[in-house]
Length: 167
Image (cartoon, rainbow, N blue to C red):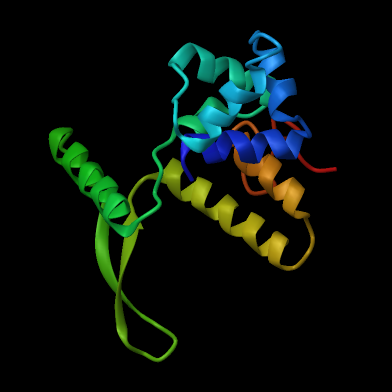
């Protein structure tokens, strides 16, 4: 999702209209909804300080809004290339590309991470997706967990999260 799509997603989840959010951000009555519409459509991109204010008002982690959009495969693979370059620069081996078998037994590439914290985050994500699929948590709870991660992390059920997200 783009920054604008993420703003719209969080705004709708919080029940704000474009005008309400714009007014809370200090835009004048006439242009409040137009400015938010411009951000959501990608016509304009909010500067860092405004993005931080939007995150505060929408009660989401700023990282949720500003992380790169991974809308296409090329963008995603280049993110992995960047990860590889960072690993080389810092003389670390953060991941390996391994081969696993799909459900038909065909070999498929997979990424194995060598980062304890990232693996914990992935394990928790796996748990949340399972809970969502089994209807243990709602779409809204899942969205709340995701938008405020890592403050919503419970370390796979081992601690109380800093930020409550379950109803």
